[in-house]
Image (tube, rainbow, N blue to C red):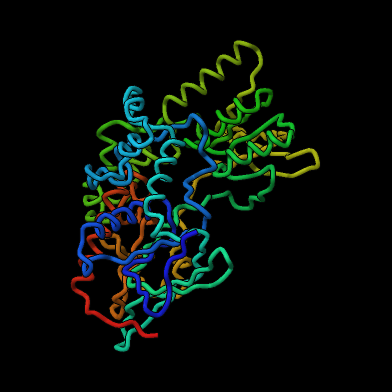
Length: 444
């Protein structure tokens, strides 16, 4: 297991917290820069990841699930089509390039794209320390009083606490599962981010699943319904959502321009009311929507079962869960049909909350350093176009955000669409700030 250097003489130009696709793309951009730069122009970088190895939504790697973005929106191609970290280079190395092209698709299997990420992560393994949980990010003043560095306190896999100093930090810790208020998790109640391993455990344990219930109306919810329906061939699977039916994702060409790199500039420079309008207008490209192909497949299954006289797939639309009570035999879930207020109590063996994700609170991540970050009128963190957080004047050290910037950079800030471009922008920002900064020796 690689351990990043630390000590009084080690100062990083940037330390990344979290190592999902966003910081992986940044690691590649920095590694490519360093490979071409002279010794004086290289950037010292490191990344800390609490997982024992690279992993991206492992719990939703359903065997036949495909990506919802083009393979060309990989870690590098939109920034540098000649990079050998591209998905096409990965396919060539795996011996599947021609086979993939013969499929005539832009959308690889999700499991295959995860393997691509792992392949790329292995190539920059020297920049990453896994099994390291970041405990604190502490501001460090220079002799002149300015905050010129951050001390990043991490606990490694061996339990030891290590402090590393950096001129900049980049937070890319991903999204955290969102659950309805009062949800009590158990072996029978879980978020869909754990779907595949939880279902595997149920199958291996031989526990009978007579009825499963999925709460949610988005892509992950529909995928969970389909997966449970075919995995437990004798079980009834109920989909509960407040809509009348699943809403198709708007992936039309003009609407998809909201994910273009140029759209980030438009959004960033728009007044607040225009930003809100753009976000509301284009929610249907990403939020609580489902691919039309999956919608049609689920409807076909539902209709076929009606013809056969045995309906295992039930759509409990315009409904909400009002109560969940665990019993010795399973769960008793009260579902209310909203138009009439009528309630039905279902005995359920599995309840899956496909209720989305949310960005973590930056204050919790930064601790004391959060007090240095400036806020806007709505208490959102002020972030520059280069993804660098605006800070109080005595601070020259930098905080970069990858994710959690939908309010400043638009819908794509938490998605893969602009990951490659963003990594290049952060790299250029680091180089620009280093060129204008005075050279200081960090105190110890």
